Length: 273
Figure 1: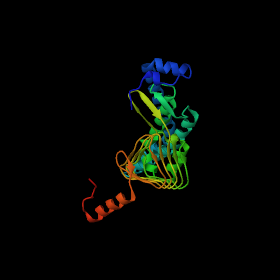
Figure 2 (figure 1 turned 90 degrees about the horizontal axis):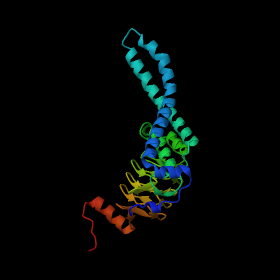
Figure 3 (figure 1 turned 90 degrees about the vertical axis):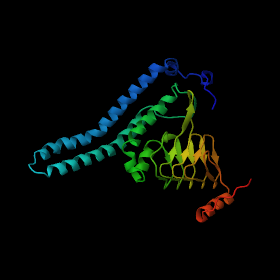
Figure 4 (figure 1 turned 45 degrees about the horizontal axis):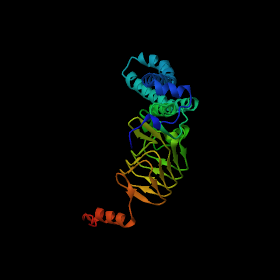
């Protein structure tokens, strides 16, 4: 990607956009402080039911005059921690719905009003991704949370990873399988440029373990992306195709059969000169 030039930026959309572009450092500091404040309030609200329960029962347990108070207090605190996590699954989508987090496709500078929804949406999502999401991945609650955050998802989608970003820009068809530790995100850039573009994975497609899917990628119906592969921005995978590698490329039927034969026999893969 070529170096970003401010002349490539779309025209400013209003006062906020002009302010962010002109006062970049103050805008960054203000946005950071605002996100910290939002995160603190969301975490605090989610913690409230747990504090009520612990505050109600912990003082009584503390005065038990035998060793049983310690494991019982431990179980109480452990249950309160899970209650906090489940409450966070409600609080964060509510914040995401109320706040200006409606992301749209964009190509321009980092410092732009268009980046604000992207910043807020991911900041809120990461509160769950880096805390409680691993506990509900591969459960119905995991899919419900992703839907609540804006992911468009068909029937029976199986998502085995929490390494997601920009989830409101991700669309999954019916019976899609996302392998463990796969990464899907809808942005890329560098050198001051930010590009936000959707990811669409059509029905019955399979994204292999630890594969990476970047923004502006479309995976066709019934396609397979092999483990550890990387789909770069702009990639279009056709229906029922098999892709693999870094960067990923189409794998023909003959090549795939040769790979399978090598795996079973241990013989080196023959390649044409």
